Amino acid sequence: MRRTARAEAQERMEARRRRDEMSPRLQEEVPTLLTLRLEFEDFRRGGTSSQTRYTKHIIVARAAALFVVPCPDRECDGEHDISSEVMRELRSSVPEFKGEQVCRGYRRTDRCEHRLTFRVLATYQGA
Ligand SMILES: [Zn+2]
Image (tube, rainbow, N blue to C red; front, side, top):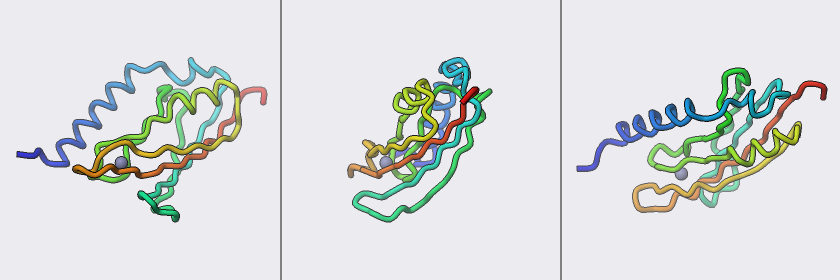
């Protein structure tokens, strides 16, 4: 019997929460960081127009130095870990940068290949 997608989603959420708690704090990693905003756009495999767009405001004082976005496709088990890319730019005090990542997860037996693009806007002390 296949467990329900809901139970699996719950499990992934719990795993993410634990990982988040164990991660270094964003403010310790980038002490000059004041504000941080991430804008995401999702594209389904092969799609050229975005399906959803959303903005995430990061509470710098409380956030972990971890940027993991679950795949927006509910049937997919994948997630986008953009932490290393984002942290590299933040450590260099880059005020704005963009990136994208293709999902490596699976929807049942199909590769998902959902594409996530992101734009990061940051402000720093003394900038
Ligand atoms: Zn996916």
